Amino acid sequence: MGYRVAVAGATGNVGREMLNILAEREFPADEVIALASRRSLGTEVSYGDKTLKTLDIDTFDFTGVDIALFAIGSGPTKTYAPKAAAAGAIVIDNSSLYRYDPDIPLIVPEVNPDAVEGYAKKNIIANPNCSTAQMVVALKPLHDRARIKRVVVSTYQSVSGAGKEGMDELWNQTKGLFVPGQEVEPKKFTKQIAFNVIPHIDVFMEDGSTKEEWKMVAETKKIVDTKIKVHATCVRVPVFVGHSEAVNVEFEEPLDEDEAREILRQAPGIMVVDKREDAGYVTPVECVGDYATFISRLRTDPTIENGLSFWCVSDNLRKGAALNAVQIAELVGRRVLKKG
Image 1 (cartoon, rainbow, N blue to C red):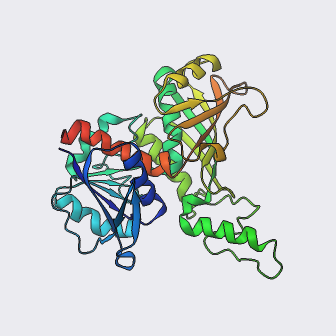
Image 2: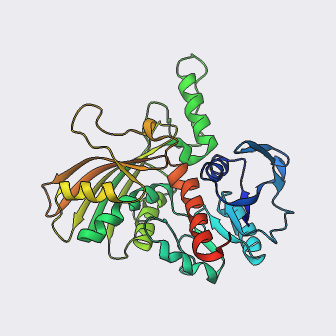
C-alpha cells in the first residue's frame, strides 16, 4: 500500500520539479494530487508519464492525504498548511514561514534525519533555504570530523531562486540589450540582472545584512550546530539554474585537504570533482538536473589556523528545494508512516 501525496503549488518552478522528482525516484504513491490557486484551476502538469489536472487548493479537503508538499510561498502557506496538518497530512513546506519555529524541525536528510521525530508537535516539517541546503550537506561530514568554528560564504545564486519572474526578467533583458529600443527595465530585481551581478537578495536588515544572508546563518545553526559562526554575502548572478558558493571554513582541529576530500567523497549526497587543471571543477551549467551537491577547488587556507576553502555547486530547484522536500517525504515514509 502506497501513500496519498498532494503537491501544493504544482504549476510553479519548484512544484513542477517536485512532481518530476517524485516520479524519477519512484516514490511509493498510490495517488498524487496537483494543487494550485483558483486562477490555475485545470492547468495540466506532468507526473512521470501521466498528466495531472490541478485542483483548487482553496476548496480541497486534505483528509486522507498522507504527505503534503508545499511550494506556494509564505502567505498562502500560512492559510493552507495548518488546514492540511489538522486534517492529518504531514506537511513538508518549502517556504520560509516555519523554518525558525522551535517546534518545527528544519531538515536536510543527509545532515539531521533524526530531527524528523519532531514533526508531531505541529504535523509540519520545514525545508531550508536553497543556499543553506547545499552548504550544510558539505559542512556536516567535515564538522563531525574536526568541529567547525566559523564559516564565511559568498554565494552566486541563479535567477530561478526568484521564481519564474526572475528567469523571465533575465531572458527578456538579455534579448532586449541586443535590440535598440527594446531594453527591459528591472522589475523583479533591484538592478539590471543581464550581464551583471547584484549583491542583494531579499530585504535589508538593521545590521546591513540581507534576509537571505541572515537565513544562511540561522538555518546552519539550527540544522548543524548552534555554536558555528556564519558570515554570508549573497549575490544574484545571471545564471538561470544552479547556485554556486565559495565557502571558507575554520575548524577547531587540524584537517588537511586530502583527508577532507576523502571525507566528502564518502559523504551522502556529495560528488567531488576536484582536478587542479583546466575544467577540473563543476559549474552551474553542469549541475542542472542532477541530485548531487558538487564540491571542487578544495584547498588549504594558510591565512588562518585549521582553514579550508572549497567551491560548492548544486541545482537549486532540486537539492535547494524540490529534491530535499521529496527526500524528507522519503524519510517520513521510512520512519513515521511506515507503509508498504
